[in-house]
Image: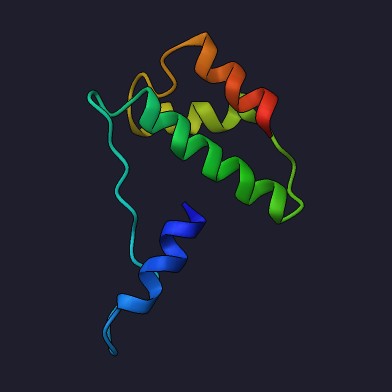
Length: 82
């Protein structure tokens, strides 16, 4: 997502938001989308030397949208790759 953000920075006209949101969506908007968002949040946390709490972040995501991170495989992927 950082690379998408950096690439889009060159296309922002003067006077517009320099930190536009990035839209991420899969079919239901919870499984793969949740994993992409979770991964981005966890990488941000690690980059800023903050404590990583995957269950806590998943809980916050599910508070905003039910069923984020649908499968054990998605959860394991996030846990093993951070």
